[in-house]
Image (cartoon, rainbow, N blue to C red; front, side):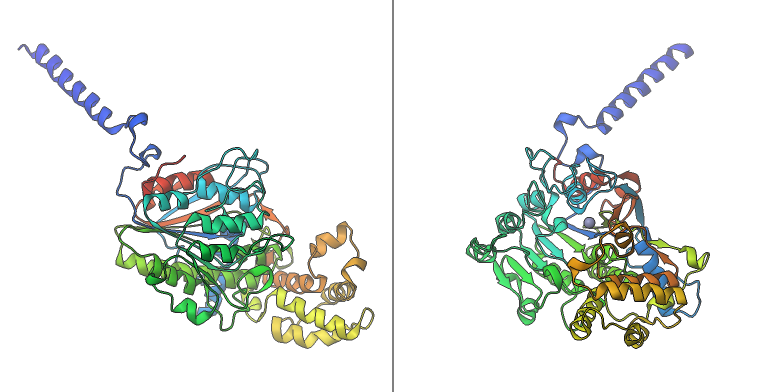
Length: 493
Ligand SMILES: [Zn+2]
């Protein structure tokens, strides 16, 4: 061969090799193995944890780190990392629904569970209620994995429900409750059910139907703690629930089981040779943020973090086959590290003295109203309680005026209260005095709030373990489900 010819020959060989390599590397879409269509070709995860902090975005996380720092160090600039904020892979997700830049939990949950966007209020189906969107939990079950759904709010609430139900409205609680036992999932735990016998309480009890379908239903603390793998499919409900069939706010919890307890028990029951999928929702972060109560929010983020720590203990034993994904479904409250009144400073130590949630304060106000009546309220009666249970001592004249106005409103029967733009902006439909107490306290700490609803900001995503690298970058909430399905080896539908 001449020198020129041999160059041509070499180029042809290299060219053929490149073509061969490319055709090996790019899978034919029609023949892709389940999961590979989303660009994940690695080892499949056998154990998958999906932690969803409802209403939890960077301000809630950041505030918890600052607050924990004030508890553990005298250095005012110390921030303590949470168990998941040190995960090696981090990204960011957009959360808009098909109907709004500000999603609700049903649309966001549908995206996070199934990879499909839908409208606000819609659960696991398209906005016209024609197509059912299959969730990764349903796919995992079909694949032979065990499935667990844990939530600190009621088990028929939007975020847990998107993993097993398909309804035109998130408020179809009875139908959702029936879907729970239809799912055949192995472990439901945390809160209760909002309408187990239907809206008119005239339907067969959904929990009795669950028992007929082979579920063991328990709501006694010892029975829950003594559950074993021999018990089969389980619905475990916290005894003595708080409002709306939810678990207590962490700040109010005394002897009851924690979200971490339910997570730990779930791991014990679900662990099996075919692997498992477990979704754990920190549902009351959202509720505390709707009510603009920072201390209650932060304590619930800490409880959520403790639940993640249980998954990390399992991960330590199975590091090469476990995936843990932590994210939120949307931000709630428009929470901010910073308030106009404190300019460039924050004082998170000021919320450390709060001993109860706004909901517990509501109860005290109601009891007081029962004693003094509509016109007998006196702010002076409340100053010792505000000092002891909220650490609120240095009240300015403006603070006292706001508190007195709110107290007067709180003494009225709900029907008699002022219902105008001003009162909504001040109290958001909550107990006026409670809202004013937490607003003043949060403002003194340098924590701001903009809404009693959700906001449309992007949400962080944290991942560790098998396939975790897939979560780097900035993507949509639907992509999280698709990525997780790829890593689990189930096919997005
Ligand atoms: Zn939500």
